[in-house]
Image 1 (spheres, rainbow, N blue to C red):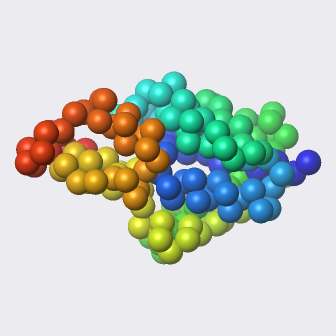
Image 2: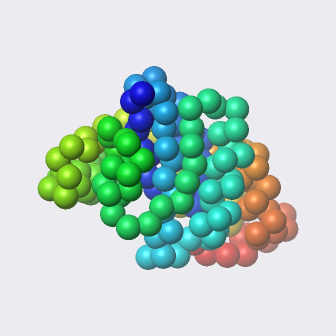
Image 3: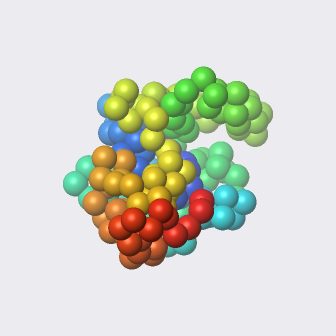
Length: 169
């Protein structure tokens, strides 16, 4: 069985992430969605909340496991028996950072490959940051995040119509 690992903060999971999960399942038999704590990004949702949001969003997609992880990604991938890291590239601006990470991961463990996937055009602009920002200004996120994530955003930060946003991400 070929297993790939799709790491990220996923704060929150978006349709762009789900698109990459589905695309990766055309290459791998199983995809492990590895959710990182990443305190540097100051996530809106806790690690546990993010794991649960993703599990709900992928419940009808077979071949997906969702787990929190810590430490070096290549070590975690090796423990989980993953052949490759799955990384998304939305734009040229993502490339430089992803290349640095790929080269560092290769230096740490040459047996773990990196596979770059591009989202479909309709999802290529979506990021968790954009989803939170649109929501924070009272915009609709129904085409950006799954319904369970939109509900979680409303629960965490209820925004009243015409408020111009209550929070600044």
